Length: 108
Length: 121
Image (cartoon, rainbow over all chains, first blue to last red; front, side, top):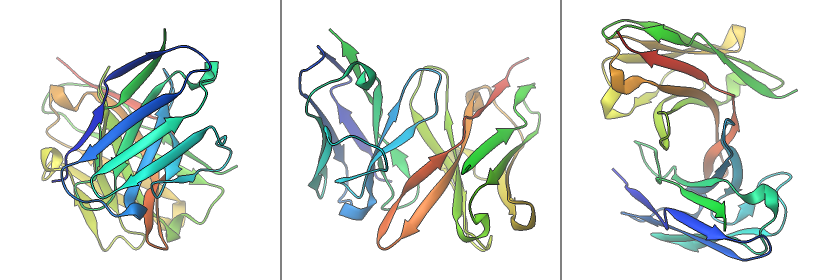
């Protein structure tokens, strides 16, 4: 199984600051098979980034993804109030499909 | 509207059974792989199972293999999850999700709002 590890578990930042979220896989994941989701309290997850670096429909360009192999990054260039949420990375390289444990981005 | 709507959740005793449904609308359901993903209270996301568009392939996470069965009815645009021998650790919100699997890209591009399953005596 591919284990996906996210760090940090919690990121405390102020609006306007830059957020850098890390995602590490225990085995190589193809660039087409790594995605990021955003989840707010009481809501379903929402696709944010697919294929490592492509923004989903309607996602603002302050969100960007990068990486390859086993190391991937989600960057939020300038945090807006609506960006405070939990972010999950996800590998669809092989079954069982797995998610990271999540990074909570909270208001400092 | 393109959407997925889950139903069928509720309170069930350990060892009991429950069947979840997911109604799809606004897209050609029969051409997509579909998944169930769950989230225990206060925890992260866990993929449970998925099924190919023609139902010929099905995959499960080890923890539910042999207890849960994923199925679909393409004529009714519906996805199902039959859950047997339920355990306390199966307590979670269960999400229906659409698998995008084209052009060497794979991810979940559409999610339902979820249905809560509580396993307790």
